Amino acid sequence: MLSGLLGVLAAGWLAASPPPPSPPAPFHWRVPGLVSTLDVPGEMSVGNIPIRLQVYTSREPVETLLQSFAKASDAAGFYIPRKTRRLARQPHLTALDTRTLTAYTVILNPSPEGLTTVVLGEAKMDQKTAPSTPSLVPTYPGAKHVLQGNFEGARTLSFWAAARTEQVETWYRERLLAAGYKEEEPLVFRRGQQELNLSLKVQNMGTNALLFIKTAGAEGASLNAAP
Image 1 (spheres, rainbow, N blue to C red):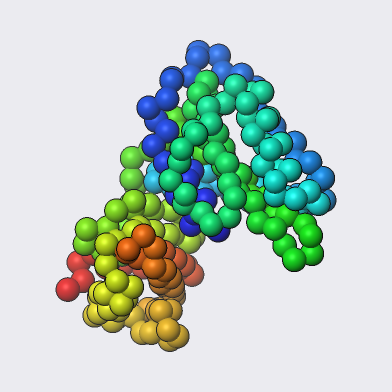
Image 2: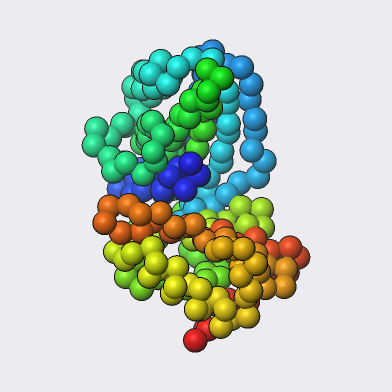
């Protein structure tokens, strides 16, 4: 779910209208049938855009929640794209506040217990910053839709490549092993205090890849110079 959310949130919204000198008050969502709220601490950065996440649980079904969020977005004057590339398997909705350049994405995930998990992402598109650090790992040659993220010591790299999953897997395994990593489990690599998980999935005649890098203590060295 997270990788789809990040892809949607970091889409190209920056061409929207600029914010006015005095922006309106922050927008607050109302979740119908609210059961519980989980605040996700901290702020993550995806594509150098700051993003906050909140997770709710609702007793309402997906269809009711989608209609409610769409109506709330429309009433607030948000821009809702009618045609968007589907980046998450779960039902979702993206809307843009063109006054503050804030993009909101809601992803809905029904549970067998009859409840619905609501993941809300808020992206401040006008606060995009220049990259401060290089990627810890190289990107597969010819990759598209490349996104890098940072969140409380964990870093992510996601992309789509016009290649078979076996090709992408072999390419990364060779470079990680050459850089001193050991494959402790299938597609789980470790070097010192740094752990890297590689997730691959066939999609659109190619491969969706997500690399999740977590380091305990000091950040590991970059792999970009590895042979």
